[in-house]
Image 1 (cartoon, rainbow, N blue to C red):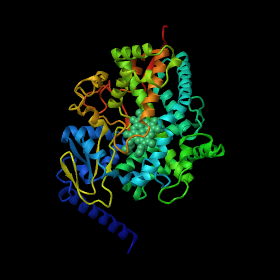
Image 2 (cartoon, protein in one colour):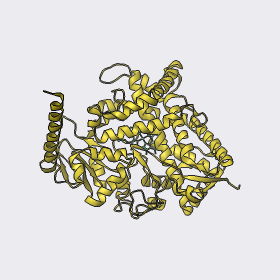
Image 3 (cartoon, rainbow, N blue to C red):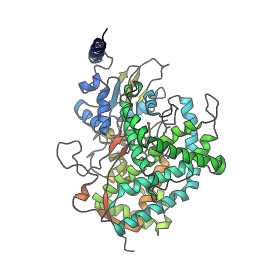
Length: 506
Ligand code: HEM
């Protein structure tokens, strides 16, 4: 047979395969009765395309508006939009984290984030838990405060030398510095030294690849992982060398030199193989740790600055609360005084609701050994289905949050909270929820309070004010001018807000 004939037959076979698979998915598949976009029911590339465009969260929201509270978002995936579904999915002991998360692994090892085997996960979770336990956080606080002080110096430099301060630039570096110190006992010093700043955009591209692959795992299983190839070709190796350098230096200082994540990991054995933790395993954890603890904090804080700069009443209220609770900037630390700042917490929760740094859908499924169907919000779910609640969509569901696009910290004090708390899942919920939640609240509260003890701030003028918000064009997904825009790639990218800082009159 000629080369040309082989090619023709291959194309014909591929087309025939698509016709058979698509017909099955549209007419006979167990999920055929669930509503959703036709393309989504036929192919997982629908989700991959939206992930690549960094808008999985907006697509899910639109689909819920159009099709209701349960949507078929891929041939084998259902997204729900109710508080009952949050409980049925994330507190269901029979369900595990979807195995598809393994496509995000770069070394082929499990991390605390990707492990779906409950034994492996609980072992890793205990180790992470030790590194960010209350006791560890108390010991780590002075280091965190040191990084906040460096942030304050950077903001002061910006106030004196720049027309306005782009908060994303400064806060992102801060977030990564804190998390590298927590993980490796050594800061990357991104705030003051440009050497390793490239890792922030490297991480983002890596995450876009991961999120796209998560929507369409065939993308990786078939070996068509072109973005990863290019990433490795350019800066990837430099990035891996940087992490390797951090871990080598940490090892030289001795495992017991500090109670950080590295120490707990390297001092433990794999519960299944009984072997010591390998460097590759540690690398896998590190690759998750940076965006998990750095990008997320940056997203949460920048959204909060955005909303406070646009809501003068809330700004005045939170400022007054902080300034009457603490006497000086140096007084601000964790403890009963900070916990008594209830309005601060409500502002943080409200911006986490509106602009969740992890805005997508967190998938769960039955393990291969469990064959019985399960129930989500009254629907019988067949085996082989991935289920989840989309965080952005449920956070904007008016059944739980009336006037959902408005920044209203007061809603967190209302008597009728009911399902509002169940539906509030910025850190997810259940056994796979965020291990760094307490640290995140502490870090964000200390940073915001210290900044407010020293500065007044307002939005920059003219078009610079709009950075971070929507386009202002009606009918567009990103049209809402007063909504902080997140660009979802599992954690998310964001821009601005641009602020004008003034020293506070004492
Ligand atoms: C505002 C800040 C943060 C947000 C919104 C956030 C959100 C989340 C979410 C939604 C998950 C669940 C992922 C899933 O189910 O697939 C998660 C997991 C996790 N987060 Fe965070 N996170 C934040 C900060 C942090 C910090 C500061 C750390 C630690 C340095 C951290 C460490 C982790 C870990 C280790 C997991 C994996 C938990 C597990 O699978 O058992 N996070 N986070």
